[in-house]
Amino acid sequence: MLTSKQKKHLRAASHNIQPIFQVGKAGVNENMTKQIDEALEKRELIKVSILQNCFEDNHVVADEIVEATNAHIVQVIGNTIILYKESKENKQIELP
Image 1 (tube, rainbow, N blue to C red):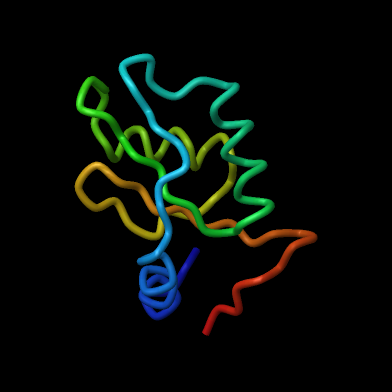
Image 2: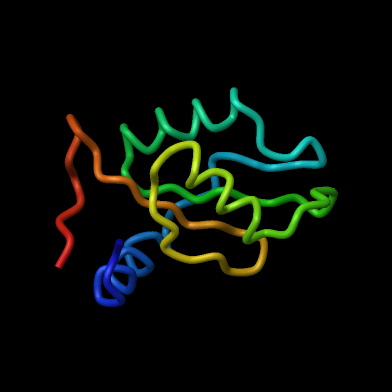
């Protein structure tokens, strides 16, 4: 788990990041979680946008992604989920 200090650090680092995935009315599927996992391996910190037509609760969507990718939720703010997963080969972010 991430400490509150680490989450604060990651939230600050995520300010300039644009969401690279969108969850729509189809919800979260296996293909999407595979792509998110690959993106996390490359970038470590990503944002996922939840569209207005998604019928699931934002926190449920975040939990589904985390369960499939073993990532950490940094924050769920509005319709955006910030996710972090330490990269095995492309380590870029040093946590406090």
